[in-house]
Figure: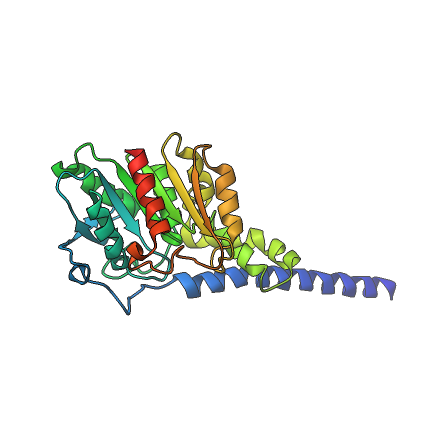
Length: 305
């Protein structure tokens, strides 16, 4: 009788553990598939003429064979060229035409890049920066081949997932000379667990952590172990980087900024705003309306020249 009871208890415990493992594995897989297994078609895009600009639309080809949509705003004898990257589900990179106008006034050219699985770019899965850095690599190759940009420094500038991608790209591509990061996450897995803590008890979020890493490996392969902002930022060496974040960001918690800052080179510049401003400014499409924001960015680029 005692043996039967002991077997029943062990069977029950084993079943609970097995079902729990399945559940903890399934949760991040389900969420990642629903958030990332898609091509983002933008409801709103901007045109260069809305900002009094002329721009050329073109495509670059990535090393893994994807055509990536881009816009180029040039200026005579550019002092720098800035590659602009947007977020996970938007907006379109064309939202940066306002920045391109500002940059042109200061002698900088701009490449507005819609990363894979966004807008007119190829791809049917968002890879949260693990693979998108290759889109930036293709844009850098385009810049390096153009005589107009001979010897001109290249700045990778992104917001949210675009910021994480900018950091990843700089870590992998030596020809990127500087990074401007708005609200980057330290890694996909960490921001996933950080956001979980706002929904479930902390202990559940911590238990889930290794399963999030497992799901990332399943979705993105070996690059999910190697390509992440918290690792890539350490490769910047002497190259300048500006980290910007808001303290109450509800999309990428401020903890990601603190982790990246701790791992970044000592010369890293930072800019922190109060409130929940994931895009750092309330005037992202028309940045000239925020003098502090634009002054920080323009000053950073000018100082690196």
